[in-house]
Image (cartoon, rainbow, N blue to C red):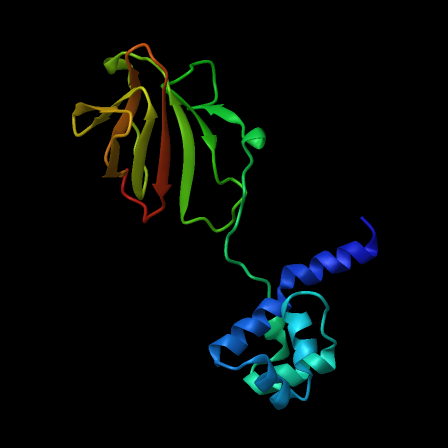
Length: 200
């Protein structure tokens, strides 16, 4: 990648124009008012806010003085998680690595996001006997929405059958397991929210 493109991408990632606009709107200032306070033209400020041009340090300093923020406010990266996962990029994994197929396969729907507060999966459940369902537990809470087929959720010492369109929420520190019920394919959206560790 050319150096000029790397610099452009790096500056765009900082979102300086958006940060200026957020400060201006937060103070309920129009572009003309900000221009009057900073000594900059409204047209120049508009171009900066829309990402059409990048401000020089003296220009940025004038703006920072108006809002009473340090220059580093504009150079801090936005750490709020954002991740797009394309269908073609997803990989399917078995319940556990090894020879046994287990009771489900899953695809991570959010693997690119950092600092996630939940984990989302597309799960395909396999047909196994009730006695062969492997129970597990983990911290947090779990939500399941059945997309197709019938899902057997074993929890609280009994199996609950969920059909297409059904959903369930439960404390995942309880022992639980899954299996496909019937011959038709069974898939579901599974979201697991992280939480404090529970004793094993």
